[in-house]
Length: 287
Image (tube, rainbow, N blue to C red; front, side, top):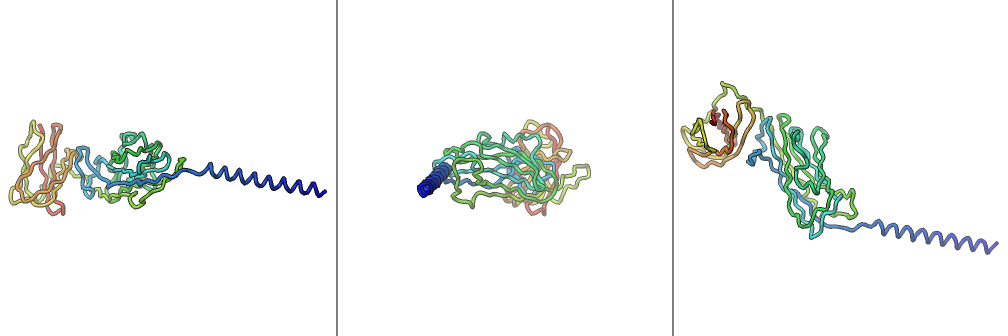
């Protein structure tokens, strides 16, 4: 009887030791390598499709916009592991993706899989890192085509998130303070285009008008000088914004407005100063 008990005790100890060894081996197998990197986002920018930077506090209804999201990775010579990170962009409550925009053309589609959903009253765009982001890729500019949904104020937010959701290597963020970027914006009313539209308090003239075989015109103040920051917006007769740009004018009576390639037709040019105290509306025709 004593022999049997001793035998059973040895067998039990062997079983325990064997189990501990298996658990240890399993734990070692589950240890993932570590990668230290610094994923970061630059300042967000809004522009029109002519490439002119827009004033985010004076966007117009029915306007198409381009959102630029600068992405940088300082990864100390190591690739960013696939499945270790996601970029999430919230468009705010007043902007949506243009229905004709293909998310695969946003940029870096070989590395990020882009999807979009409506969540909490805004469109949220997500880019999942599906391939290693090479150590040599130190800057990527993502670009999204947006459409104004309605008037009002809101903000675009972007975050480069460390998720480690589907990776064999654990990504550690060297500096978590530079993973987020945001830009507040304001959508104004659509410019009403009708024969009775007021000229405003700033008296301007445009030459040549009508214009043919030119890509720029001269706009002159009829009395006094222009001093400060001015926004020049061009609309078609349906009130759709065609082009917009801002100029710094330093005590001048005439400035050149370069409208580039423009289809023949009739247009409205609206000039406003930065603080809204001066404005003018000009009728212009391209032959």
